[in-house]
Amino acid sequence: MRMLSAAAALATVLTMAAPIAASAATAHNVVLVPGAFADKSSWDKVAHLLRAKGFKVTEVDIPMTSLEADVAATQKVLDAQKGSTILVGHSWGGVVIGEAGDIPKVKALVYVAAFAPDKGETLQALTSGGPPTEGLKAVHPDGKGFLSIDPTAYAHVFVGDIPAAEGEAMAKKQKPIAAAAFGAVPTIAAWHDKPDYYAISANDLMIPSQAEAMFAQRMHATTITVPSSHASMVSHPQSIAALIEEAAKGE
Image 1: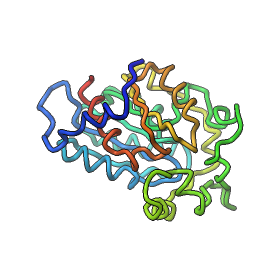
Image 2: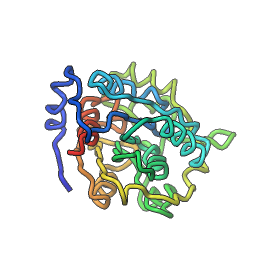
Image 3: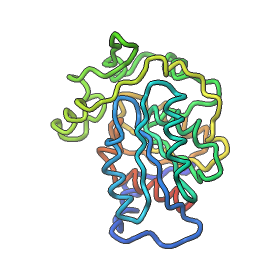
Image 4: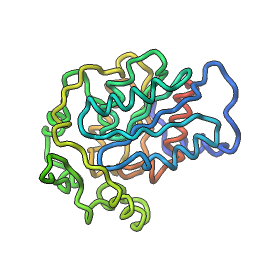
């Protein structure tokens, strides 16, 4: 597993003002899948950087009502792509891309502080092996079968390395996820058959960074470690955009 420092990843994007070089080997489409407790706007900073480089970027609006529904929404976006595509998932979005990414046009998978279950591994099982993280302790059910993060804790546990006002604004837009989704059984693990890239969040309060490292190691992913909260695409967009560009070029 090749490990890159966050500083090296940042250096890669210092030339982001220039358009991507024309290359038959470069995937020009990028599809971004959000994680639980956020919406597709959580990808806006990364999307802006990639579009400035000439990539065609689509942020998926997944319903978070079930794994099946989220995969269907992602597959619909993938169907609309013309040519090779990089499929990216944050957090819960990692489960989604593992199911949806098993098609020829998906050139590589990029996981950002994301779950990467194997076939048959539920998130319920993966998260029950140790004490809950500070972030998971702040997750509470409503009366309709959905989970959300306590708004007063959100800015700290989800994205504690951006200005508090920005984190509080994200809390107001957080998208709850169906509790039943954590018991959904993945039937595909596309990471077995695709080039994989992983961005570990070193200061993650939602998913332990050790768990993220385990996911990255077992898929033999090209890996960076970012000194970031769970939402590294919000607090360190340059590093995440650089990793996605690396995946697009097949480096």
